[in-house]
Image 1 (cartoon, helix red, strand yellow):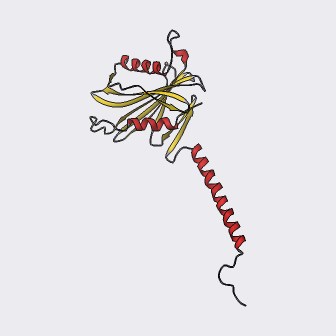
Image 2 (image 1 turned 135 degrees about the horizontal axis):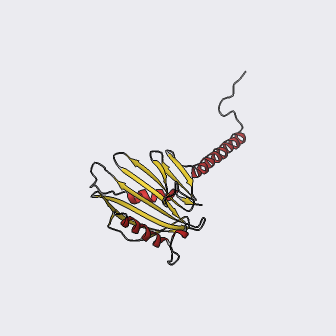
Image 3 (image 1 turned 90 degrees about the horizontal axis):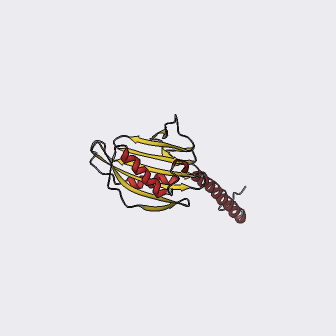
Length: 208
């Protein structure tokens, strides 16, 4: 019996199957991209609660903190803080506040919320230095007002950045704060990445 040599498949059959494979692979790839968009990146977890979601590194620890003397945060006010402390200190927090906690005699807006935050820091005994220019960025349709500043603690200059916006979805003000000390053994080294860290946190944060 003679064996056929060369291409033993019908040309149209081969092309059709090849196209089907490409379509199938494309569907699988698209499905993976959709899953990736809806899931935290590798090495990250997602926190969801109190009207917001945010992704954070698995190397960080988190704690929920009350603000008004309650046993735990409430839906109206509270804070969640994430910390990673190794050779460096990286920390960020999300605070949420309902408008009812502010005086009705004043016009409450994100800029005013930042002023209130800075006032609370100063009255707590902490020292603020180098409060930078107030800037804005749009995030998920919200106008976010943010500022860099230096927090002086035990004669250590801690690079910090804070931003605030109003979430129409749940009627709360949100504050995102970040600090960074690049070398705890040499605290005089000033962080060059606190701003990029802050924007990285903001990028995965959504209110709902």
